[in-house]
Length: 213
Image 1 (tube, rainbow, N blue to C red):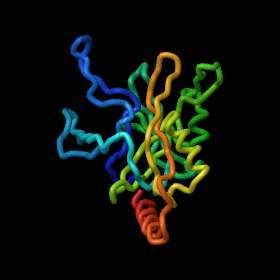
Image 2: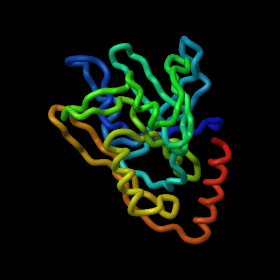
Image 3: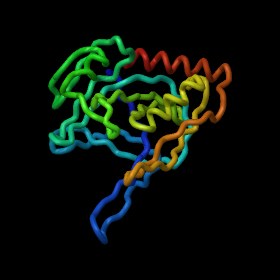
């Protein structure tokens, strides 16, 4: 991806600091935020990002969506991921620790032996997740939003009932529980339909994004 967009996201679980009596919640689950890259760097010379909370509900226009493969190996504390891509027939590389470790279509990569696992119900699955990356127009600025898990499935269900670039979407969240795990899942609803002039502007921005990524 050539263009670097600021990020738009939501805290799916509380972010805390400290332990015991000093434990405090610094970011509550269900709060949306924008995340901008700063000029500051960490000890490895990597640019730092700064989050700003923007509320529990926001309105924006989903301009465009793409895909990305990702896997976190908790044993080795390593991330494996692909570049963002558009179609399932694209041949894409996988990187781990900045080194290419495999190349193929998304189906071929997910079928590789090193990524095979078993779900909680005993079903064979690929540990290489196919996530969604949305480009969202929020307050006249384009942001990149990454979705995974139940929030991603909620979006996929929503996108089957409405063409996202033709409407203003209301982003919210709802509390979810599974066993001892609790989290906030993102929700999507139509706020309003766009008029002809707004649709033309969205198409122009959509074309700009396609050309820049």
